[in-house]
Image (cartoon, rainbow, N blue to C red; front, side, top):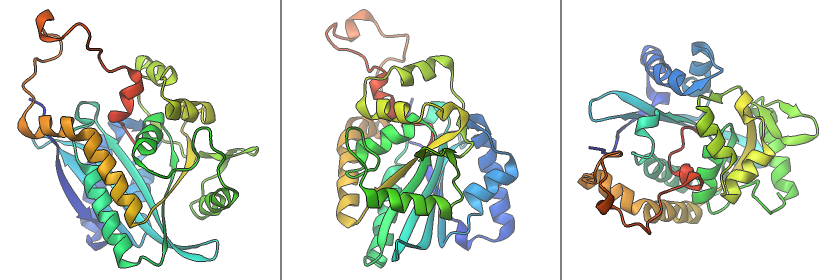
Length: 287
């Protein structure tokens, strides 16, 4: 029976070096089943040993106690365009069988709310170079404000901030003519069928990502900027909880529906369509 993954939060900034090393090795064993492109030392430096003001890592375990995924959140104190800012960088990965079975976003938003409330005079944002359409589709679905966005021109000052942040985090351009595309070298492992579903998705935000970053399969990332404050975070949390209410209830209470492949014809009304690739954002492998 499907159930919610168990989440454990590690405050990495308070952990001794030996404990951080052990955590990095545990996470890399899962990471290497989801991504290619980084060796262990690169992964440790990128996910665990970032020179951030604060780093929290949410580790996911299934009912059997096996590690099935992680979400790493780093808070950097920077000056961006002359203003004191807190910049959030995140990395995440979840094994295919465990996707969509956790409440990491709830924990992450509550963490960001506490962070914002402690210093509300600072400018806050999430800054990323997203290497898979699932990540952008997921974020654009739940974030009230996100740049770039389909059918909307990114404001010049936001492009300037992203350029400044790209330099701060050593994100090199792929194409001198396209400031949004950066070299990340994280490649999500996926089957040809999965790649085809993403490339033929009917969702506007997914299509926008594919058109903007057609080389994501080579580890290219698309710069993404999400400004936030308390009100934006609450709106995002409400969107997530309302949109996932049914699935969360089934996972918490137990899903007693017939397993895939065992459904009898009479169990499913003929006029009920099954989810298509446009809803694939509900199970993102990565951020």
